[in-house]
Image 1: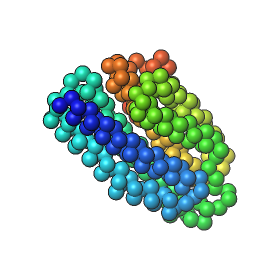
Image 2: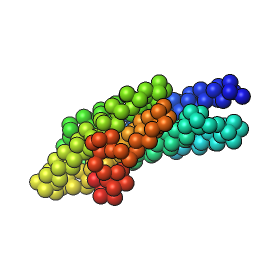
Image 3: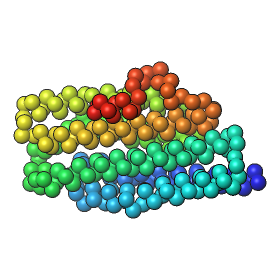
Image 4: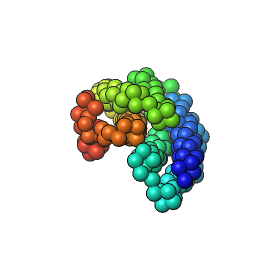
Length: 241
């Protein structure tokens, strides 16, 4: 019985890694669709989320529940399965947020194709740093999950503050641009939404790493703030920040 559950755990880990690969590629494509103003890539991102990511998430959840019912795991085996369920949900939510970024590309393109494709409508360079840090957090959170690396998980959690700071800087800059050039309000408002979605993706990466710490150490760190987090994700979302 012990051998069987260990084998099933490794298979389940492989499913999570595959889902994370699909989500990572979709997130990178969503960012590329925005930077390159490519509605075709944006459409493909949304299709992949609906037709692959969502189904993979459901399959993994069913598999976790099946293993729980069959083996009635305890201790570290149970923590692993609980963590997989939660990581699975966070990956699906990241996929949704990548799709939301792609949707903003399509909305901008459909509203005014000529204006959207013009040289004057560019994504400010400050977004690239936020995108790069968030992608780094995502990749490292999956690496931490694969290797059960709590040191790396803590590093990813602390990096969330950098994304929060980048988002606040972007908000300030875009609001200043809107005040000077109201004609860009619709375009820049969509970019504000992209910044929000990117920040939420970083939050989900943090969630994944907090659950990795629980899986490996049996320690719940969700509400400790990891010494630097000042507000919960829900409060940030309610504030629209």
